[in-house]
Image 1 (cartoon, helix red, strand yellow):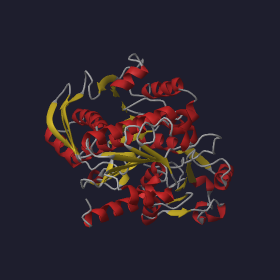
Image 2: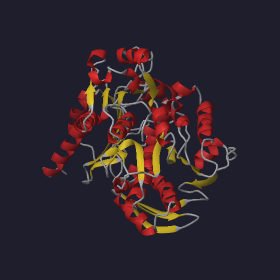
Image 3: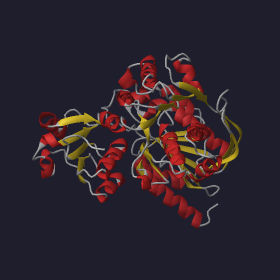
Image 4: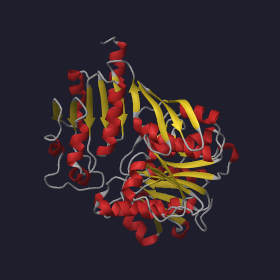
Amino acid sequence: MTFKGINSVYFLGIGGIGMSALARWFRHEGYPVAGYDKTPSPLTEELEKEGMVISFKDSAADIPIEFTSNPDEVLVVWTPAIPKNSVLLNFFQAHYQLKKRSEVLGMITKDFYTIAVAGTHGKTSTSSLIAHLLKSAGKPVAAFLGGITQNYNSNLILPGKSKVATLVVVEADEFDRSFLKLHPNEAVVTSADADHLDIYGDEATILDGFRDFIKLVDKKGKLYIQSHAWYRLGENMGISAGIREYGLRSSGIHADNIIAKPGIFLFDYMGTKAQIKGLELHIPGFHNVENALVAIAIAIDHGVSEKQIRQGIKSFKGVKRRFEIHSTVPGHIFIDDYAHHPEEIKACLSSVRAMYPTQRLTVIFQPHLFTRTRDFAAGFSESLSLADEVVLLDIYPARELPIEGVTSAMLLNGIQTGKKTLMNKEQVMDYLLESRPEVLVTMGAGDIDRLVPGIAAWMDSRTKQGEA
């Protein structure tokens, strides 16, 4: 894959999960790659090991000299997460050709048969599972993902021995209407709930955004749509592509005989083309069973056998921070999840309850964005009430400035649990040492993940000490 006249690529926000996948692609294609991000992270460390030059200073003086000699030959990829007053952003805008991440992803995938996975929840796990089923069956697939897959330890999957991909799986992000830059031959819509109201303004507008995405699907292609999303978007969406509905209790593709066990969900796949009984999914959760349904349907349509599907489902290790289980010892259970929307919290905690129905459930939640906390406060409180004990951390601002009166405290009154409290990240370990949770879930899309290694190590030490 080449970009005419481009000899090197610079990323503004290279440490972002979507940006880093693109950076890895260009590096794989032989381009010199450099970039900027606000702070170092495990992901930026991996990119540096892969040969990319990364700066953490918002200064034009830190741009490698080979990226400044011929600006016309440098592609600068940026993300709207970069603030408008960024020194680097303003420098590049004055001298270079800039393209948003979504534009570049659309350019890369335009010439490939593309399976695009959209949805306000579930798109990372679903796209990762689709890619894994295809790759493990020997299909020449590449994938641009919104998370680090445990099987491949990357957010970019390459076709391997075949070298040239004929299938591309891509996560289609609704934020900033990015998914409208794609050219899907097939599409999945896992959900269509209200979110990103800071971008769309209201619920009706985001639903229109999903309808616009659906209209991009090739007329000869397919749309796989989750039952509730189809209900919300309207059954008559004015498209020529074939529509296949799926869901746990769908009249189309659905699951039977779901059995929730610690660390594993068993289920039967019931499809229009095949029925596969006794599947083992080692990424627990009712929502993950639903994600698996559409992944299996797509795999079948691309010639993957029942035996390969069984092996692929069983061998899938999941995505980091998506229902990631760090400890399975009874009384010392620890799960970390990226959930940052009321529906995601509800899906995760309902599944945890099914797995551990008699044990005390403690949740530590870091709200993400002031606008999201404000817009869905009642929903957050209701979903968090599924836990026995709730700890709220300060709101992670991401790209936003504070909004007067919007804090984590506004969720407290609506949470209907026996114990609920506010604290900062520095207080968490002391709290855990005192409370000794039986089942602990950490949640959020901010920097709560920085706490995970320490908590996991503490849980492990409790186990080794034989603590009951």
